[in-house]
Image (cartoon, rainbow, N blue to C red; front, side, top):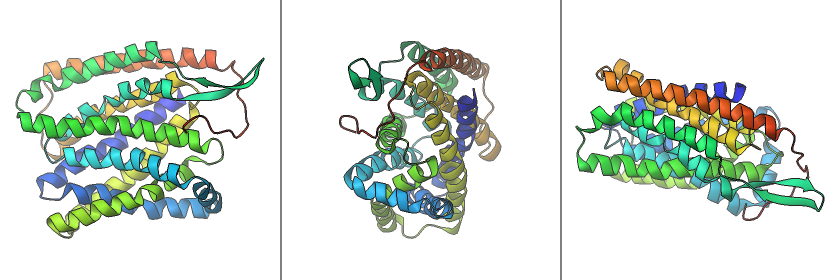
Amino acid sequence: MRPLLLGICSALFFAVTFVLNRRMELSGGSWAWSASLRYLFTLPFFFTIVAGRRKLKPLLTAMSERPVAWLKWGTVGFGLFYAPICFAAAYAPGWLTAGTWQITIISGSLLAPFFGQWVTSPNGTVYQRGKLPLMGLAMSLIILAGVALLQLEHSQSLTPRQILLGILPVLIASFAYPLGNRKMMVLCGDQLDVYQRILGMTLASLPFWLIIAVYGLFETGLPSTEQIGQSAIVAVCSGVIATVLFFRATDMVRHSMTGLAAVEATQSLEVLFALFGEMLILSAPAPSALSWIGIAVIMIGMIFHSLVSQRSGRKFSTVKHSTKKIYPPSA
């Protein structure tokens, strides 16, 4: 139950991203600066945390052992996740990007066959690939049905251009985030903690963010003071607090594909938090009766997802895992 609570708290802080990114776009800020500033601001936070805990050297050693893998999956997990979301904010309201982002619930489940674990068997230590969590996938479809109801009325006022540029980039991000996160968990194993892994991914994605920042400089010039301030808020709420909570939750269920899917499903609550945030900050209209039905469906789906996750977790606890540091295929 604790991983799910951490996931819900992370969804609350992640929702700040959608609301403030939309606010920055409406005030004329560049999506490139919104994206790059978040990670440039979070870098000193995590560097201080890791260095203060005297765990910087092990991280740098691990990164030097497999620099290409760190660069690749750090850029996928952070770069191809956040840049498309900020780009989409220029063309669609926050509730739409937050709602579309919920496809990550399905994305995470569909990625299960591409991952696995080393387990002990009568034939020795073998690599066992994950299976599609069918029950969890069914619960995810219920949540997505609620998200669809939540957006149905609002989506009728969108233009085809808003739908294309506001949704397609978020679809890319929805696969990139769980893919990068899970690949890095496999790569790090039990050698690095959550803070080290986040700092490592931030450092690895830094070349990507510098390129995005240069693009923003040529596109609109330097960011305004308002955008810098709001980006700092996003960096703390989403980049630090939400990311730590979410990564901690996924670490707790890292050996259970159904558990991972359940934690990722908690991110569906971002739609509710983003909707209420836009009502409060951007004076968005209150939800209609249909939207409230969608909210109820989301909550029902979350409850069932939690029950399925707990049952799967009890079954999984009987499996013995190898503690040998062995890299799985194509990690």
